[in-house]
Length: 288
Image (cartoon, rainbow, N blue to C red; front, side):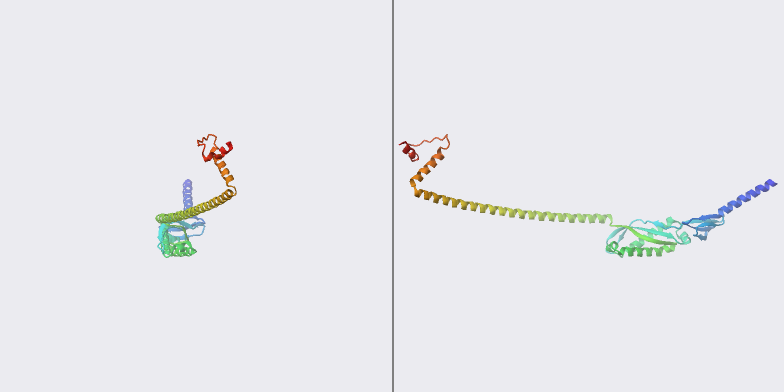
């Protein structure tokens, strides 16, 4: 009998221990908990520490208290100036109402999917009213604030607060980038061709000018040479004339000697002349 009581007491103590331990749960600093009873929300707990629930009847759903990140896929946007950009945005949010969050989105995965749509829609709407110059200027900060405000209006319906929205990158689409590159390359090639044409034209002008100056210099040099040659011949004729007038016989003798020298300077020269030739008259006088 005593053993039965002891066994019953032990079982009761074990059941009580299990019930007590299963009724206690801990909430961490970075957590917030929704207590559910028969699938219906019963309590929301955001304070860290030990808390109690009915072990069998209540279940808990844990949600993040920290700021979460959401990175929507890049999307092509048409700007107000009809330019297209491939925009990659980034946002951070936190769950401020876990009951509303649970009822509308249920999980963080569902929240990310819904926020993708909301953020991309807000980005398209805001950028559709802006130009490329606005995005590249200080107006970009105001644009981001407008996008964040628009996103928050929608996000509040899901118990979410978006704390920041940023454009990570805004690039031209690949086809536009390629077309821009091709246009820039064509422009550079056109400028290069114009520079080459101008260089060739300048080269021809320089060569033409140099040829003209060369021709003029050669003509002037020939003219001066002919003038000097004529003046020299004139001076020589005058000198010869004066010398001839001073002593005609000596001049004739000197000229004959010059002729002898030029004719006989080569030792292999052979002259066949008549003894009566005037060329040998000074030799005849010497012989006589």
